[in-house]
Image 1: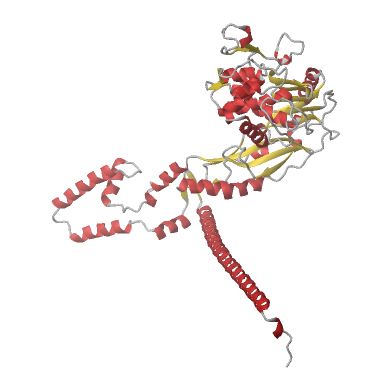
Image 2 (image 1 turned 90 degrees about the vertical axis):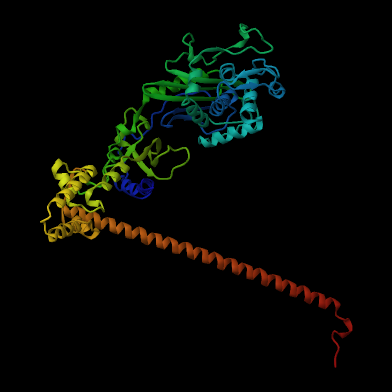
Length: 557
């Protein structure tokens, strides 16, 4: 309980204040002509080049303009399937799954009742771009295509997509099915972080189980092949480092392509939308542009300002809590021009964390190069060894409420140890009683004096605090001067007082809020009663007027 309370107190109060104290924003130094590298030519209508680790956009052409995605939609379909299914689960093709297709739609030729594993389906989805498989997976994962489509849009929003809406799991043309180059880069960046997705993409072909139309296991129609040409060494478009990708095409969407490449310490994601048979040339130019002009740096290896915030909770150079660690996330990166330096970045600290932020993070550091966001890092805290220190303090003889007897003192001195030994003390006490019984001449006054001495050694809180106040102490192997102890005691007392006052004020505020709510409810109830009474009086008056005799009205005396 103490550990949880201290963790909560440190993470919510002390650590944020401490971090803010040392996190004054770094001024931005001028960089050459102040420009971001440019000069990349892309023929397609929409394009985006992003670092998949830092999520920095290196190049964009109409990156936030919606286009039809075609079959690169299946990257999101595969990601949701992997996240929600085991590879060995069995997918049964329904009549609706195999019939819900356009003319000339790409399929594996499954029939209603065919059964394939999720693994078989994922390879057929990503390699052969089979639309009947996309439908079957949607029904298997979501229960229906409609439910799966809702999952697709929810996942896209969770990843930060702002210009997309998906209306089917395959990417077939639909006015309500569209995305942006930037959104598809976010989706692909998330997909390549999954080891199952990467394992599938590391192959170039795969043979799935036989289906009714092709019952022979050795039938070549049961083998699917990767279509992305930049993955194949024998292709003219082969690009070293490309490890994942998905193609797409419809007459309405044009050529679409999403590609992931890992080289020079950077994972780049390239997206082409509405291309015109130049999707591979456009992607090659974007990847060359990225690797020639940018570099990726680990924040923990370059940010000296935040990396120094570790075990630094001290007073006058003496550690108060050497169990508190504040660390930078070691995996966080920033992506900047090759000619730039990390010191040229500005950073902003935020404690507003969401569900997608790492567990245990206490703050988020957002880095910028000029007006461009170039990466995010996280500060995390941990409290280690706290229970051990509490146990050690509880075993301190000075904090023990048990009186020291003469026998226990003899036991410690005879063994030459500083720690109290109950067994040795019991033996010594037994020997002392035997000696006393053998010495009949010993005056009773001496026994009383020894008992009085034992009573004088009984622990007293006031004397303990007095000794803390006036004497140097050795805490965890460090000699702490008495004036430092006094400072710490005063600070602790002040903090306790502030917490108590805050608690009292909070309770009073809650009490006043409840009282205000009651008064508001009473006024509302009274107002309703008054309104109802006035309405009833008005109705009665109207009725009386209606039944009043006309001859009486206006009679003069």
